[in-house]
Length: 212
Image 1 (spheres, rainbow, N blue to C red):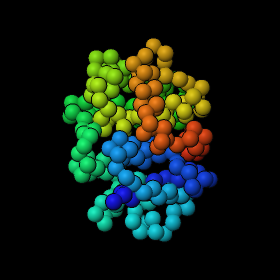
Image 2: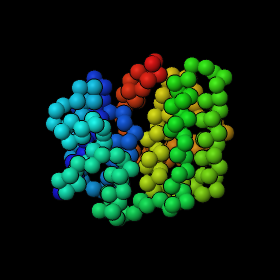
Image 3: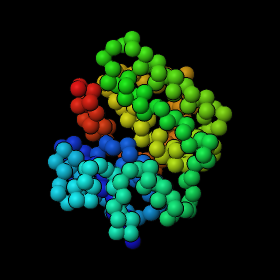
């Protein structure tokens, strides 16, 4: 039985996968565990009635487990891990929060209009901390094997690389070689290539927030 999942459709292209890192995290989990799924693409700027009936807040991703629709990628990946324990993607608890502040600092820097407000340095500090961690524990956050924490962080780093490159002409400092290798190995995985949004859709998805 394939699991049904609703994810964001690309802006202006309703039949193409959109740019939601939380949707990609769930899709990556399903791909890595080889769980069959049926994809429903949802136009979030004009939400269809059937979708609002299963996700009243209008949020994606939502996945159907045993006739019940469940929202929130944290909850969803937890249920997938319980229902499909092999291969295990469990992250050891001591590594579960590695890199967890990167997305927030990335968004602050992306939206910032003031070059001296410290948001760029905040992001660099978070990336440096990740680099140090990978240097000691890598190549993935919990060591040799990819786990849930990598599948959550990978899509966020993908968005960071594309949008900061496009809107700020900014790249991850060359000196952070462990982060660069980490991104390369995650972005190159078959599961990632299959579930990522196209670059132009990522840029389009963030443009309204940057120009706000």
